[in-house]
Structure formats: C-alpha cells, structure tokens
Image (tube, rainbow, N blue to C red; front, side, top):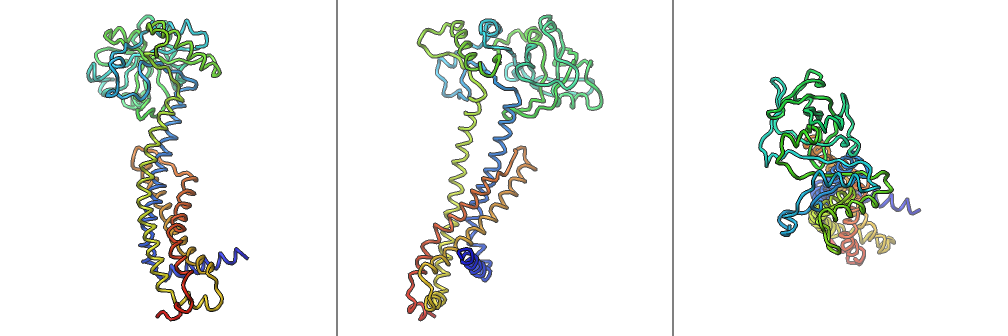
Length: 415
C-alpha cells in the first residue's frame, strides 16, 4: 500500500515538473553545482589519496626514516636550535647498523643539490638530459626500498668501497638517452665524469609528486669522491621483522641520543618516524581541503535550497484551487504535506543526479587533461544524492506545511 502511495506521489511530482521544465531546471542549478562540487572535488582528493598511498607503499614496507627534523616542519617556524642542528653522517648510519639488534638493513644516501652545486647535465653521444635526481647510495639500498632492477644489476659493496664509477638509471633516463639501444655497458657523462651503466630500474612512478624514474644512483663513496663538500647523510632502516619496528625505533633513538650528546630528560634533536607518520601528516593536509570543499558546496546548496523553497511557495500559490478540491474530496493535511514535500525532494533529487553526472565528467576531465589522478567512489555518489534529497526536505518543509494548512473553503475561492 505504501509503495503505491509513493509511486502516485512521484508520478504527480514528475507531472508537475514536466509542466514547468525550464523553471524547474533553473531552480535546481544551485543544488546541481553544490553536488557537482562535492563529487568533483572528492574524486580528485580520493584519486590523489590513492596515488599517494600506493606510492608510499611502493617504496617498501616497515620503513624507518631518520632525519634531523620532524616531517612537515616549516622553515619559518624553526627555532634557533632547529635551524642549527647538525645533520647525520656515515658513522651514524654504521652505528645504527652495528648497535641496534632489531634493525636489519640500513641505507645511507647523499643527494646532489642544484641549489648548492648548480645545474647538472647527463649526456650520451648526442642525447642529453638536464638536472636528473642524482644520488649516492650504499649497496643495501635495494633491500630497504625494494626497488626492482629491470635489467642488468645493482652495484656491489666492493664496488662501493673501491669508489667505482658505475651507475643504475631510472626509466626516464633510459628513454631519454637510449631511445633505440640497450643502455647496459654503455658509458655516459654525468657532469664532467664518465660512468658505466650496469643496470636500470623498472618504471616506478611518482613519490610525493616527484618522479622516481628520473634518478641516477651511484655508489656512496664514489659520490663522496666527486663531491667531498657534501656532509649531510639521509638514513633509512628496516627492522628484521615488521613486529620489531617499535623496538628498532627505540634502539635507534637510544644510539643517536648518545652519539649526539642529548642530555637525559631532554627532547631528541632529531626525528625517527615511519610511513604511518607521513601518511598521518598527509591526511591532515587533505582534511583542510575537505573543509574548503564543504564550505564551497554549502554555499551552492544554500542558494539552491532557497531557490527550491521559493519555487515551491510559488507552486503552492498557483495551485491553491487544486489543494481546495483535494481537501474537499477527503485529502488530509498530511496528504497535501507529503505531496508538496515529495515535489521538493524530486526537484532537488533531479538536481543531485545532474550534479553527480557533471561531477563524474569533471573527474574524467581532470584525469585525462591534467597530471592529477581522480577516482569517483560509490560513497561520494551516495552522499551527493543524499545531500540533494536533504536539501529538498529541509527547504521544502515550509512550503509543504503552508500548503497543508490551507483552508479548503478559502482555497476553493482562490482564482
């Protein structure tokens, strides 16, 4: 019985909307824009979130990062102590490796800084590439970051200790310098120095917005030989098993506090953190974007809701005689209320459906024509449609109540 009533109410609502197509469409523009904003922005944020988490997981699991600053700290907010903190050294990395029983592999790295050392050119015959990401790493790099070599091999510990000029390339470097040939065994120029290519990585995508396929890796001590002025070392470690990660962090902190002379009871003058810390920091940033999205969508929905209420008040005024006739033949106040409330919900619901479609088109456009990823999730579609129906109910209840309270005698007199 209830289904028949709902079907009849929907039929009446659609008939009313069909008789005023243009007016109905213009009325729901605000709802449409609000829902489109929700779907479009959520799809972009969801796409970026998925891409970020995939990138974070792709560098390996159970990673421990050691830095002189907490992740996300801003230079302008640093204290004097934070600005003058000393970096880490090769000896710090070796101490972690030898003195922390729960730690498995440790990798230590140098980075070539364009700011400090200027532009860097990589050449092979007539092909050249400007400013790749240039790193000096130890032979345990692959065990920590789980980066597979597609062809060739990675350099050995002996090659690192002997400061051999060998390198492993990212796929973008290979495609730029060797578009029609195999790079293995070829010699390239990195700046003014000659290196032999011994391997290259599989395509790995981006991490934190930066390409990991634009990297050139050379042995750690070879890098120090070429750039002896570089002092700071980036350190990452991996516990012997995932269950030992917190024990490994405690051991690393204890070793570094002793080495850096941190007094008892004083806070660390360094940071030891995991992938979960980075993910948590990233989620805090996206929450701010969600708040902005909610504000923008709320303004559009408010405008759309006011439009729905206005047009329903006009509809009540135009149909007073119809209301009088229905009441005269037995319709109750709640029947009239549900009739007009369903019309408001139908009006807003149609705006929501159009908004969902437009938001989906926006996400496709973002994915196809920009570097940003986008993915429409089912929950966002459900939320978008639910919001549109809620707008119809909230802004339609006053006109519906006004229609239900009309006196049948007064309504029948209306011309």
